[in-house]
Image 1: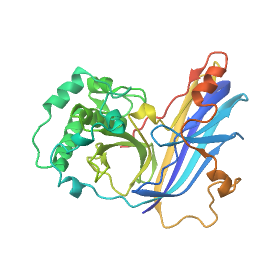
Image 2 (image 1 turned 45 degrees about the horizontal axis):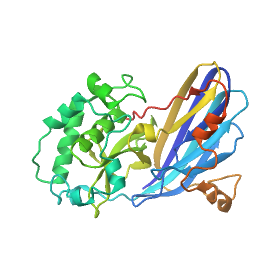
Image 3 (image 1 turned 135 degrees about the vertical axis):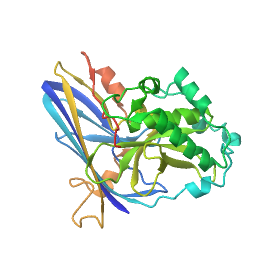
Image 4 (image 1 turned 180 degrees about the horizontal axis):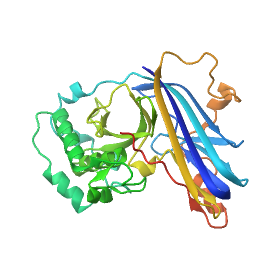
Length: 330
């Protein structure tokens, strides 16, 4: 399936601000489950963009807007062909929990079995994990039971949580959006020593939507990471497109940054996802840059010479944090 994604973010200010430093994670990667046919990022202001790969393997586009401005428009367009493996049948052949103890010393897996900034440990989470059944026919059966339990524990409801809401806060509320449900699923898996990570992405549901959030669990060396959508209650299919992966939302927010000024900031996000037959014949990734030059713009880890943090430290005066877009697609 070939999917076209239009992702627009507009940052508005009540009075001009300056010295904005902004990074975005809106570029889908090519993986075993999807192939990126094209990606284009356009910013309203004429700014240079530096691209690098973060510690989780995600592409990050970083740019500055130094001149006084009252509005920043960021538009990302992607064409992605999905060819996702259906892991449900394969997980049905594994016992619960999956036999990963021999791999537990892998530092990358250990990172995803521990608490993280938004997936914090709490009495509510411990009680939730303790209430889960321990015996299941297979790993797939255990995951399906967990998805139902997550849906029962957190009712989907918009405008009760924010992009910065921790899992413990969402559990006390008993409500949240896909971001919160994904955090609960991840937290429960980690409570059972199953490596789990947070996924930011899109889902092919025509119309104006926000970005979506789901999870990946470790299915062992043979399967690798397996995508689970606890909000929809099923294994991820060809309609899902991954943007980035991390410990939780705080690692991979679609936009983040800082700016200087006294004006108040507001954010508006519009996402349109649709399946298409083919890419337009006149479409190019970089209308003003050759493909060869554009490919050289991606820098490997470590960060470029001046990372977001270094640039912020180097600037004087009070800096204010940019708002992030909460992931709340139903």
